[in-house]
Length: 112
Length: 113
Image 1: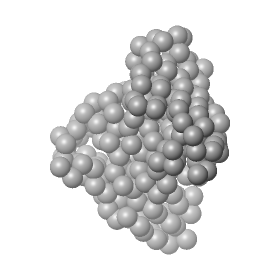
Image 2: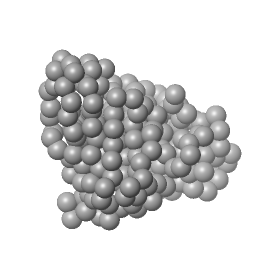
Image 3: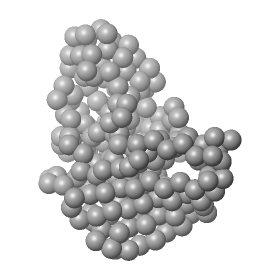
């Protein structure tokens, strides 16, 4: 099993550009989530999904969209990138929300 | 904002010394999880505690969940350079409609050889 995969690993955007961060898991996990990690701030939940077709907002959802058309994939879309969205983004999955989270390797995003 | 507070933010220890990080919540937690993130890496699950007063051990790591289920600690005995990283606690986010995890800000451990 590949576990949780994320692409790209690094990305540089200009302010106003849009892009999609990809996340996939092959463990048949129902629960998937996106976090951003900023220095000194820990991990903050952006959006999450409890199953295909179901998504909801986390702690810091503004400026991001998600969709969950399949169990395996959970892409994160930045609609109009801003410098405040410079961060490291982690996708995670678990069997159910309360279970241990498996994290992907992360995407380091810089917005100039 | 953050619902689980973690202290200290940084800890520098000599190799062989013990290390402890503490996690505190203002409300009762149904469970608490601990993760380790190596420099440049991603968080990796260590353990989940569910019961009041629970103590679990993993080799040199000892995890405790308080009697009131409002605090938790991770203690490492005789640190090694392989213990370097940031340790996070995480608990259910208060008031969330369905299950959401909220993470503490982490304790960054440096081990001086």
